[in-house]
Image 1 (cartoon, rainbow, N blue to C red):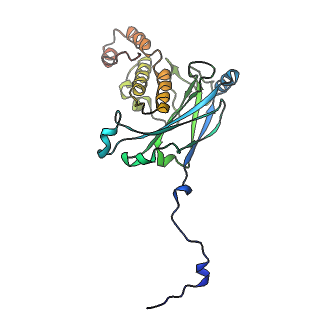
Image 2: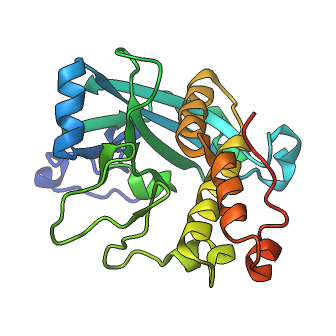
Image 3: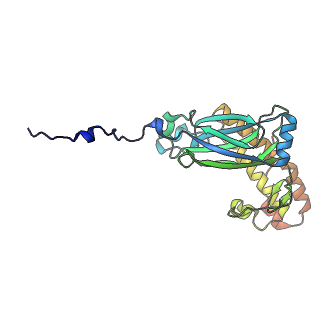
Length: 257
């Protein structure tokens, strides 16, 4: 049998191994920024902010029967923070890892709203994050919030609010027509109705696979759907003689329940 001598210096080096699960990032961060009016309003009410994250994914072929409205829930997490701008860490500790093999790609959906300590209604209109979890873990993402219905002060970006929809676009942001193809070529108030109707329908159709997700959906529905049917009636009345508008809105039924 051949014997091989290993230099003593090599024996003193630490063993190199693949990173363990414990060494991998298990969270991501949200940099939350409130408009001055939103910050002042929440401070005056002593209101807090809830950051709600749902984990989900499109099922693999073998697990399609376990899906609810085309998605498999992978758990949710909520963090409540003071009602001001700041950073919050979103943990994946509640991610149902046993189900990861059931989905093609785990997705994280982050929504932000007031915690309703001072009243029954959500006060904030915030951006959302919806990305593959692998792209988020260990990273930071910004979310901006303003009061629902707030008109931003004039500046480098001027708010263009029509029927509660902000039509201003930031550099690199897709156009309204790209995001909502049905709105293309329509008057702006009709576009606003189409946008709000589609947002409302989207959230009404989201699967509520656990308590956190159901709470998230309820907040989003309250924001997106309030007054949308009344807006539809106003828009149809204004454009009653315009066949192109009436034809485009033919399939837009009432949504509020």
